[in-house]
Length: 436
Image (tube, rainbow, N blue to C red; front, side, top):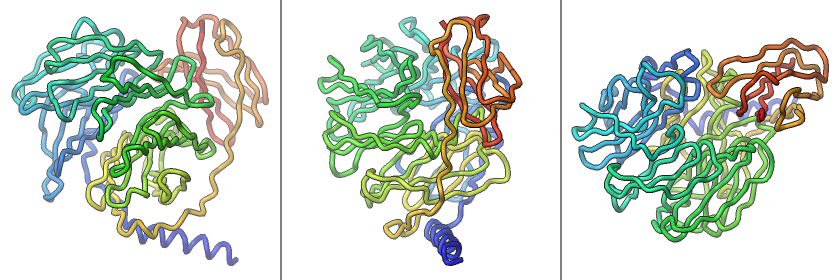
């Protein structure tokens, strides 16, 4: 009984410190299209001073966070925008292709000279594979970088001409940025073709590169956060794991959070209290698993340990948190299906550690991987159903099952990478396989 009362008090304190999660609207503009072509669509936020920019399936929207006014349409109306850079009235955005095309591979660069009111397709022939990320030099806004599946390119004239910098075994590239305290150092991160998290770093303005490989299996590295006062400290977030460097990314210490089942899409430092970090994302693939609860994880020791400090059940599947920014005392979350939410962090120096028990991760092994014809699996508990999907989320194989082990014939699938979903009484487990 004492333990139960303590847990209830801890949860109550947690909510009191964080305040109430409030919707800040913006649902209809971000409502996910149920068509398969948009399953891989992952838009981002951008905070510039007091202004919040939101990339959506219907263009970029903007809001002055100092005011109570609604969001306003800003740029590239009617286009599915992933991310953008800005130089005065000139904008370049990464967008899904025209409605006449299909598949997430149809991504393009859009260029505007009038704040996005009118725009043209600006995609260079040098780009191979679909675009995902775009980044900008904070001291030279004409210098921008683009990341595709397997390419890093650079433009020194705001997108008119491009040069190829690297062809890493990395798909997609989730993160690209200069080090805020040293713009000669540049980072990008993602996942290799064998599902290993990876960070690439250049210390000589992109002339040479070094690579860090995350230990373990399916664990893409989604984001890198830079300590606001100590330039040597970096923290990354990924699939079921965090990592920390105290030497500007030369070496890393991995922090195992696999039992949380979280895909941490964003991690950030509290600018005023940099020993505190926040992270959020989804439980599993956001377009495959239900995400009815918004989770916030926190570190109060500069990223050495992590705890779930806030969770809020929502009325429906929100699709998980795609991106997160901090504005003054508020965390702002961008969800896939339910718009934006704000959470008041209040006096975070007294955050209690959550006593929530993280569920044990269900282990399912698949072999061989890569596979040519027959995929075998073994599970701790019976598997009820297996779904093999393409990378856009469309079901290619659906197979019933009732045993701990089984086999799936994938011999008819083209060579490529496929998520495999195993359904059990304890939830679902996602694995990635390579068919060759």
